[in-house]
Length: 334
Ligand SMILES: *Cc1c(COP(=O)(O)O)cnc(C)c1O
Image (tube, rainbow, N blue to C red; front, side, top):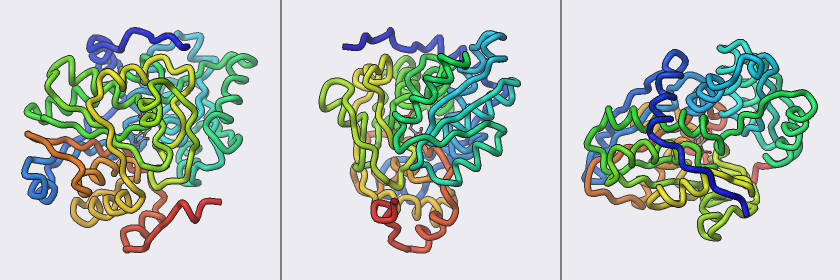
């Protein structure tokens, strides 16, 4: 059985905020008239898809790089990534002058690979799952001395993601419910730690896709378990949480109030809503909170913030979805 480390605290999140202020953008929030009308409570969208590199992952990656020693920085950093973590880490490493290698599985869409190369990182495509890509990462760590920066189960990464929670609390001080896209749980652990430290009454709800909802399966099992990675419109939410998970499983279990799942059709509907009604281009993973709202799966006694966690969607896929086409990635996947 893996041991759990002490939870990431508010002090670490506040330190992260200072450390990454020069690299990371304070993203705006916008109230959605339509969603507010529908829910009977103000609904605010946290426009984190407008973050530099297109997702919140830059926050955690920048904080992890800021915590490296000079020597670690010069040997370089490495990660396995479904895309957005790689992109954020590549940007953060380049900003700090560090070498960066990103390993990823064949399921990752081309747009994300190109995005990472454009940030100046080396990309290695290995295997059909996050776990196989991770084996190459382990080799680079043991044989070439690079430092692994994991996408979620890492103190500095969680603290960096938590800065989004501090931000949204200042932007919507009377928030009652926060909807957070959930995969490995780095974002929700950091955000929940920040929010609950300041306002324990805030409800934090994780939202995942029905297809391959790893954290949800692990919470049901009461421990980290292997979960099969499946094709989904929410491709940034794919992959397991790690069988030796040290932080995000326990933090999610103890700090998150509820997990809600959404279907592929509901995710597509949310991408359409965000484009036509809110004028935002959001990837499937970033749209799951809005999907849950539109599906009538959320109730709240006060204002809601839904985190739009990323915008790195293949634009051809986006065009087909917003044009009303029934895009079924479960059939199109190779
Ligand atoms: C990584 C990612 C998530 C999930 O974050 P976790 O920390 O793994 O739970 C959600 N949305 C987007 C766009 C992401 O890239």
